[in-house]
Amino acid sequence: MTLLDLFLSFLQTGLFSVGGGYVAIPLIRSQTVDVHGWLTEAELMDLATIAEMTPGPIVVNGATFVGLKIAGVPGALVATFGAILPSLIIVSLLAHIYRRFREMPLLQSVLASLRPAVVALIAAAGINMLLQVAFGGRNAVALANARWAGIALFAAAFFALRKWKANPILIMALCGAGGLLLGLAGAF
Image 1: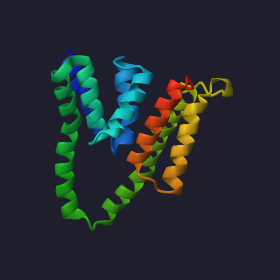
Image 2: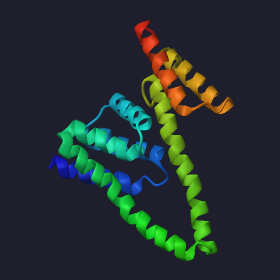
Image 3: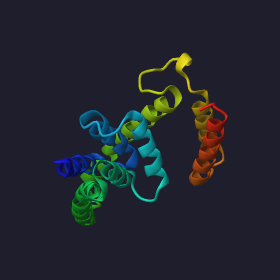
Image 4: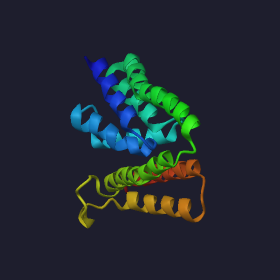
């Protein structure tokens, strides 16, 4: 039953993560933390970090990670297949439809109306992740609970990415090194 649960959970995640990887994080959270209890909030943050650092889509990397944790290599294969199956089918159909009707104003209107929803999903995922980094939880926003090292790393990374358009891989490596040093110093 675990393999079927993995397949169905990531089939749902793959089906409804319209707009990219960051949209998938709340969906992955729902299935892995809330519904099945396969991950803790901290493990989900680790999953998001690892999935972002490794090549490939976040939902595929996340499915592989969770599947491997829950049921070994068969779990990784089943969860990954569940995550990519909707995309395989939907993209093939949409490519055909788009090629045929790309100049149609109604199609352009539908695409334009989806953009705000995608931005909202990305913002919600980002805010949840920031609250986890800065305050250790989604609803525990209080200065007494602040994780100042995480806030400082976030602020430095955000500034470098926005102001200098720094390479995201370099920023992740520098934050990882900074986190290591802060952890060794006992600040993390």
